[in-house]
Image (tube, rainbow, N blue to C red; front, side, top):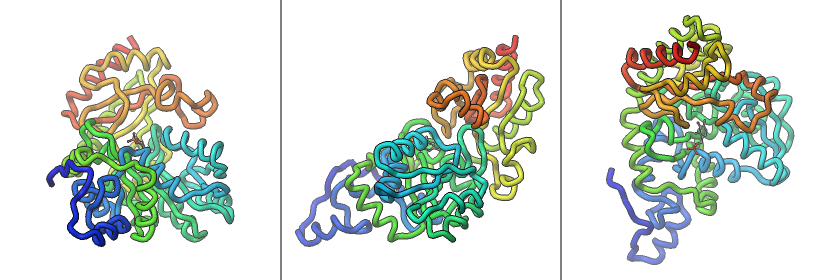
Length: 369
Ligand SMILES: *Cc1c(COP(=O)(O)O)cnc(C)c1O
């Protein structure tokens, strides 16, 4: 796919140009509306997710905001699962504080709580297939079915699972969101987002709003994401198998007090995950004996893995949720999420598994020495 590095497109006929500005599937007219490279990415991701149409955005948060602001107005209400990506949680708090949108939080696996939370003014329920950083798996079939029964749209952030592990539309979701920055692009070299719609009419409505909001992606970013997508199945397999190896060995390590990866039977989402997903993802957390100081020593000691934010790229990245992604949470909220002072998050890359284990093992040894 070429990179169409242009902001606008030339027409012969003024009527055709005028018409193009009103149609999400019409001829290309202006790059904030659409662009051929961006459209190719939208078609590819819509196909992978089994959606009718998709909208690419300049970041994952751009997709979250395009969908939330495009669907909600003051006085509306939304139901969100308790544990959400930090940026999304902050945006939902802002919607409540500044735009008068009511918010109720429910556990990710409790359709009864969801039913009880829905009010006449509820517009949507916001879920995440696999949560960050504790990797809790959402009971999508039950939660989306409850939302649908009550006439409420379900919006699912599928960033951590990717369509290789889960296609939320098959479980009843109306909108699927991605931070394409993560696994879809896969090489830590682009920031991007996607919103995929089960229904073409809803896509058209949000496309019109997206033109006003202006979170459109650059064609080169779309091209990089398209290129990354070509290896998505291979990478996801390796992310999952590397995570399996590291999580199981850490779980048996005497210096590790807990490992939170849903592929381990001790994880609260193990049974649901085994039913719902063909793999358990590449992100997990673990706690070292020695708490925060040990966690910090671990992160300084890794050599192959890198101390960096983000996830979903080919490199293994480690970070400390309590002081970075989840810094806004009180000690009480951190505890409710299961995040300890010494909890380390590891986003497992696609390196050779034994190289990776050698690095993690020496860093654990250095951390507890
Ligand atoms: C990173 C991330 C986002 C935000 O995406 P950006 O591309 O950083 O804007 C949203 N949801 C999840 C689950 C993420 O991991």
